[in-house]
Length: 362
Image (cartoon, rainbow, N blue to C red; front, side, top):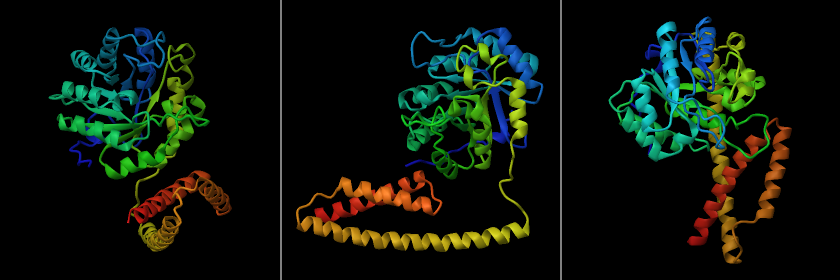
């Protein structure tokens, strides 16, 4: 079971300015001192306070550009010294952490491949123990919220209190417009469990293409996330990694200025009265839903009895496929998305199978 996290809110780390969004920006990879400094100057010019750059790049295929390595940390140090920006890079091992500490990196993040590996997470947590360095943890490659929380817990138990997360979406084999499935419901669930966490979205890795960055960034803001980590390069066309998803600093400025930032709540009496009335309606409807679900499971139990008495297997694939197809079609007529209906009906079907299993075991 997940335990409470003892953390310091991101607004108290000293590197971000309000109001939202808090923004971390910089190139996917630190490629040269000139590229790092030119990009950092462009970002600093319109108020970005935290500069990110990949020093070690975990790539899918060997032979790709895998980062400049430790020499790039000297360039980050120069950004810090000359521009006063905080610096941030990804770590995936104890060695990376120790090198970052040596060169005065202000903040680190843990990537999606690493956060999925408890052995590496423990190694990183142990290396960070005794430091006051803020650490951001990207979601694992697959939509496993417990694995994500476990990574945070390991860091917290090592004494890291300046903790935050980066939602960058999940790998998928389904054909979608984006590079990664946004999987917002996982982000919402984590946000609900740990509202005090500094919570960033990474639209760059979620999109895989700069043309989707604004819509994904706006979605993150609409969900009440604290900020964004966006990849920005002084000359994206020449980038050695992820060129298609990076923005020039001026284009990032335009994106941030285009966002509509909504308040998390309102002190208006009219708002409070109106929202309370609507929430009361929701509470009644939710109770009715529970009653209907309980009634459905009673029927499922009777079906289980029939199957037991007639020696019939519980799972009837053809029947289930037809039910799902019918419900998706009917749901569409009510303005409900196929994704929502599929998720709801799958959960109901799983519970029905569990109920019938209990009957067969009796």
